[in-house]
Image: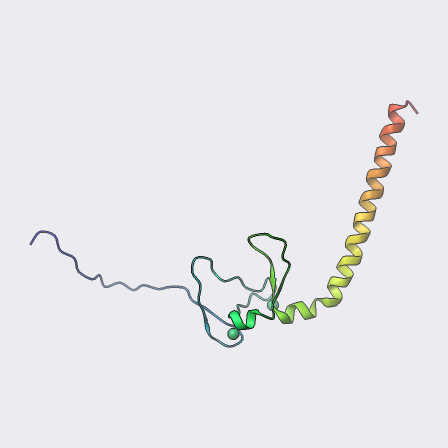
Length: 108
Ligand SMILES: [Zn+2]
Ligand SMILES: [Zn+2]
């Protein structure tokens, strides 16, 4: 008779996230949980407490699980040293180039 409604029979699937440490389902509202950037595992709120992220104010901080973070310690030390060396080289290059440009201006 005219217009009616009925409940559709549909197979509705949804994505759920479970903690890779305890197996608990990880609830989320709008933003999907973020995995560890290296091992791609997900953690519930309790297990995520041991995770590390650099709080650089971005909306999508990079997260590391406790294990990956711990393994990375000697690497992070080396990375810091090399990054410092790279910055020094860049500075030296720019300084040299500025000097060169100035010498050309002076007709040397
Ligand atoms: Zn958990
Ligand atoms: Zn990890």
